[in-house]
Amino acid sequence: MPAGTSRRDWRAVPDVKAVSRTFRTWLCTIACAGALVALPAFAQGPRSLSDSAFAALVARFSEDGGFFDTDNLISNEDSYLIPVSALRKARVTGGAYIGVGPEQNFSYIAAIRPAVAFIVDIRRDNLLEHLLFKAILAESRGRVDYLSLLFGRSPPADTAGWSARSIDSLIAAAERARPDSATAARTRARVLARIRAGHVPLSASDIATITRFHTVFIQAGPRLRFNTFGRAPQPYYPDYRRLATERDREGSQASFLASEALFRVVKSLEDRNLLIPVVGDFGGDRALSGIASWLRQNNQQLSAFYTSNVEQYLFRDGGFAAFAASVARFPLAPNAVFIRSCFVCANGHPSAAPGYHAVPIVQQLSGFVDLQTAGRLTSYGTLLNSALLPP
Image 1 (cartoon, rainbow, N blue to C red):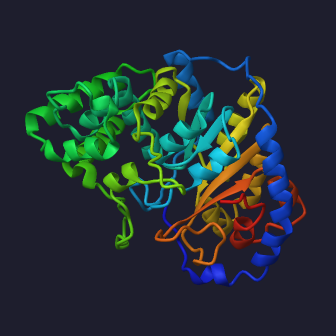
Image 2 (image 1 turned 180 degrees about the horizontal axis):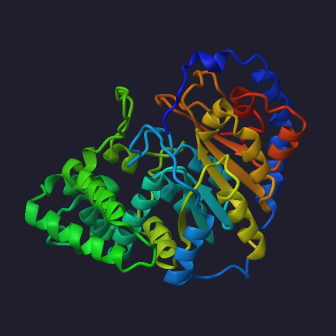
């Protein structure tokens, strides 16, 4: 998600380096210990949910929708896959995942392999987009089908062997297969039929919004970019092709479309109704607290919480304390982490990756509540340098 302030905000924080030094040694100790602790089996958690149970959880946890000045059909975080390396090193796996925004969550989910995932976003449009993704995944046997349905293209005629091809090859094939009106119409109809067969109540306006989103994907193809309302787009915004083919800090392609194995992690979770989109404000009193209660009731622990840069707006709008109170309710895995993205961080931030605009930050979650209670998270800057996980 986009930043709302200038880069000068980062340099104005006086105690950033002190906070970072204070927790470096502590964090390394915790992270190394956490890597040796096996996560519980979570035997009491559901292996799948019925369509009606899925819809009931969407309704139970969702709040009234809010507005944000972007379409967020895809991410604008060019460095979003850099954290996968830190997740792998800290052995963040299993448990429950919570995230915000569109498809970038799928790549974190593929890396972590959670038992259940919740996508919480203040915009109802995000929920509708995830219902679109869910339907496309349900109709897809693999990555070729997924990209063909997402972009309204005919799949390659010789599909044999495509499962082993690189994501670069698959994206190139999608770009070569120019859309035609008949194929696009059939694709939209097929996907909408799947969406209508679900149990989540949708209005005529919801259906129109989903159709509009799918049409944008079809018309733009892999060159689709993040779009803003009322302000100019930035030249660093990546397109879909770049997001799909991006790499982790070690240089390996790590999106959920990088291999059939990673793709199947996401598809399996969606097919079992355990990837649950929710309309919710991180600073609200329903979505996050409700999910925390559900996790406790189902013997699940939170392994990863991807917040993007939402906390920047929570500090600005006075909702951070409520967010921290909600986080305090979650049962945590020993090595649970926050995954954040910073757009106002200077290049000197310890987690900065050369060549990227957004700074990817992975932080230990266990000390978050203690720091907030002690009054040490006084600004967005202090938050971004508390309990840093080594990149």
